[in-house]
Length: 409
Ligand SMILES: *Cc1c(COP(=O)(O)O)cnc(C)c1O
Image 1 (cartoon, rainbow, N blue to C red):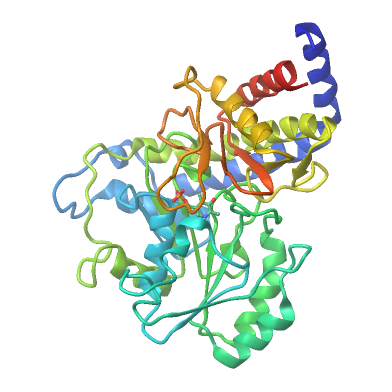
Image 2: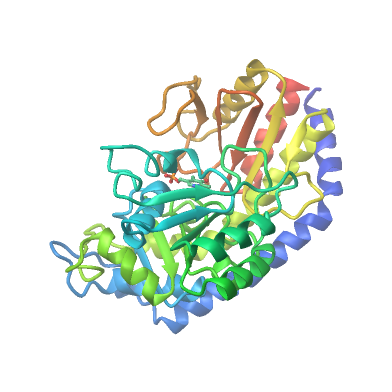
C-alpha cells in the first residue's frame, strides 16, 4: 500500500468502529466524573503534591492519595505507594499480608500471571508454600467461564482464606473477565464462606468498565501504577484498595506490624500520581480505541485477535495470534519503530527476570516499561501471541496502525 491508500484504508476502518468508539467515550466520561468527585470529596489541594522525607509521619499527600483511590474504586481503605515497586510486588504484598500457615489460597482463574508463580511454590525460597500456605487452583472453562460446580464444592469443603481471581488474561488466550460476571460468583462464595477474602488482580482492568471488582463484592483489588491508573504520568508504584480489615492485614506486610501505613516518605512529591489518576479514564479510552483500530487491521489481514472487536473489552490488552515466531517478532519490532523513546533500537527476545520463556518486549516509553504507553510484549512460545496494549493518545496508536499497513500488508 502507498501513503494515500493507507490513509483511505484507515478512514474506512475507523468508520467501522464508530459505535464502539462512542461506547468507550461514554465509559470514560462516567469514570472522569467519578475521579473528579473523589478529588473534591477528599479535598485535594496543591499541598497534597508536596513530598516528605525521613519517616514521613503525617504525610498529607500520601494519605490523601490513598483516600482518593479508596473513593474512586469503592473500597473502605487503600494503600497507594511509590514503594510498591510494580504490580507483582503489590499482589504478593497482599497475599503475604493475608495468608498464614495452614491457610488455603484458591485461584479460580487458573495459574496466576507468570511473575506471581515463584511466590506460590517451592522450598527454602520464601514462597507462600515455604511458609506453609497451601495453593490450589481451578481453571476457567473452555469459554473463559467460571467453573461454578468445582468452585462451590471446594469453597464449601475447605473454606479457603483467599479466593483469587485475575481479571486480565496475562500471557494466555482466554478472555478478560467483567466485574458484572464476577458478581454472581462473589455472592455465591460469600454465602458459603463469609470469612473468605476475595482478592482480584485488577492489572490492566481499571477504568475499562464503569464498575470495578470492588463494586461487586471483591474484598481487595490490586494493580500497578505504570498501567491504567497511573495515566502514563505516575513514575512508579502500586495500589491496593479494599475493605478496612483486608487493607490492615496487607499493611502489616507492606511495612511491618508496628508501622503499618503510618510511615513512608517520598521527597519527590505526589503531583504526578494525582495527575496520573486524573488523566487515567481518558488515557484508558485512548488506548482502547487504538487497540480496536489495530485489531481491526490485523483481523482484516486474516489474523485472529483476542478479544474480537465485537466483544466489550475488559482490559486494555489486545492479542494477535501469529503462525510463526518470525511474524510475531516483526510485529513487536514495528511497535518499537513508532516509539518516542529508543525508537531507533531493535528489540530482541531475552531472558527477563521473573519469566520462564524468553520474552520480546517493545517499550519505548517515557516511564520505564510502562505498559499504559504503547507497548507490546510476548513470550516466545507457541501459540505465538503478541500482546499489545496502551497508547497515551489515539493518534499515536494510529501511527502504529499506519506502519503495519505500510510494512506488513
Ligand atoms: C502486569 C501484570 C502483573 C504484574 O505487574 P508488573 O507491574 O509487571 O509486576 C500481574 N498480573 C497481570 C494480569 C498483569 O497484567
